[in-house]
Image 1 (cartoon, each protein chain N blue to C red):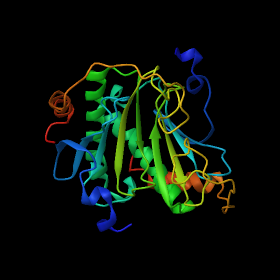
Image 2: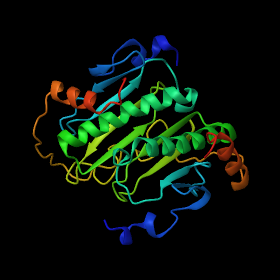
Image 3: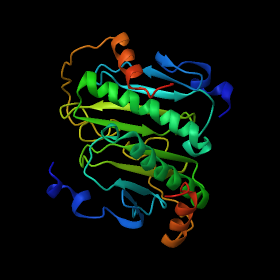
Image 4: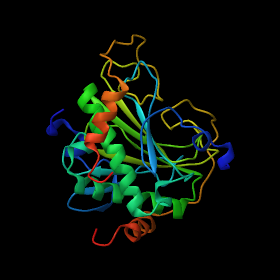
Length: 141
Length: 141
């Protein structure tokens, strides 16, 4: 896939909450999984092991800051982290809050549907989530 | 889940290729996905953000060493990385080689089956895979 055909090169890939010169955090509009975010590397890179070690560490520090923020604000039963890129081979991480009563638990969200009902969860606005992410970033990010 | 009921506290969780004082790499016996490994944290910890930053970095360095080794030896079309723990909430990472003609591609391996046929891939023995992992670890691991 060339960069001109890559949806993460040509568009933001979601509602941008935070960005640096290297990467961005977008919020995924999934009412079943409020707080679901993606961390997207800026350059069109396929795999983590294509990045130098320092860049890997900085990307993962953002992923873990999002994880910490989502835990604080949404109190999920579990966090799921995943980097696939089978469809869009441009490095990005899914940070997914999971609840025991969500529609796929304990399956991954790509697995078989376990229940139809979708419990209501308290809303958290973008500004509050962004502040929590920034608070959890290491110094200097 | 208590540690005494956790299968990753009471057993290795696979065939151990490498271990340190903190974590281990096990090989998953999946003939459809040769090279599939898991990196399992030793202590019964639920989330990455429950670890101090230095331990997170060391765990991810092992995950990325496995990724690099699997790319070298198995030449997959893509690497998939995931940490779920919905069933066994004890920190572990899946490092999964993916091929365009594997049974689930481009879905995650937890998704819908895409094709029945399972192509043969050249075998790589445990010793060769272990050496490649060790070669890709940062100095001092």
